[in-house]
Length: 116
Image (tube, rainbow, N blue to C red; front, side):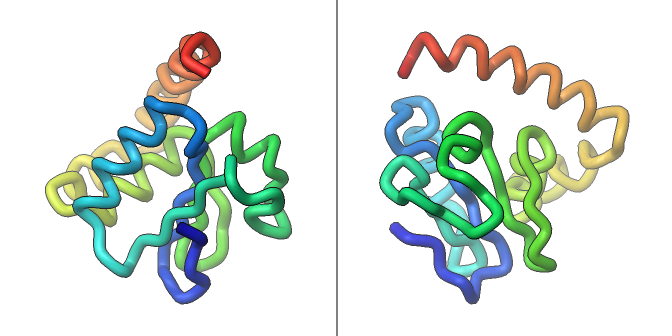
């Protein structure tokens, strides 16, 4: 599904990655029209300021204000819009916690290469 421009949150994900596809399916089943999903493996240029190769390398989310965030900040933005995850998304969105979560995400990315 292509990202809709009117949605407050746009999620850019790698639809060619089985782990990513499964996780996005989980979120997609819980979020409504306030979140759009863009499979960057299927779209050559997902956004003017986001190259496909960058989007495939790391999870990105465009916020309602137009800012593009990646990694842990992107997951936390999605959690804040996902029923049942909003509180965790808000509580974990403090700078030191985001930095630790980003380290964990970077570790996951190294393992993810094995699944692609």
